[in-house]
Length: 181
Image (cartoon, rainbow, N blue to C red):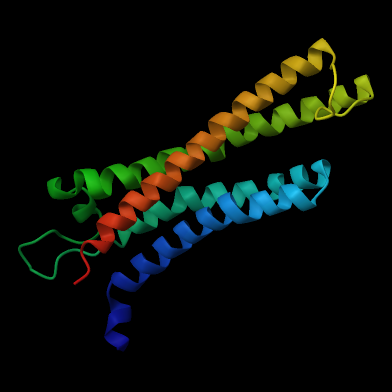
């Protein structure tokens, strides 16, 4: 049993499980429940604290998955690690999903998250000027309407990017599970 720890397989499975579990939990449980039970400002504070770690996992995990990719037991089959990820037979089931997860996680982490945070800060400043929260019903100032629209666009793109990341993770997992005997 201890010899298995000297192979890539357990690290591959644990990394994949962490990635998929984090995505499913945050997307479908944590975010939804937090939005329902927290006041909007507290929800925003929580999300602002969670998202760097969440998108960091989405960015780092595909790199670990690529490094720990278990090759074929057959010495003439697909090699392990990066060579296996880049093997022509793995282009669509391994390379494309892992590349997609990495790129979408990185885009969320390095561009969409900072831009969304900037927009949140600008909306908070405008709320003080308007004496009205950005999410309150009714008419808003022209400035707040512009900020709300931009925030909605960024949030929507980030959510779509997150969904693409989740789908790519599932595609990779299906491919990985096809190798089980």
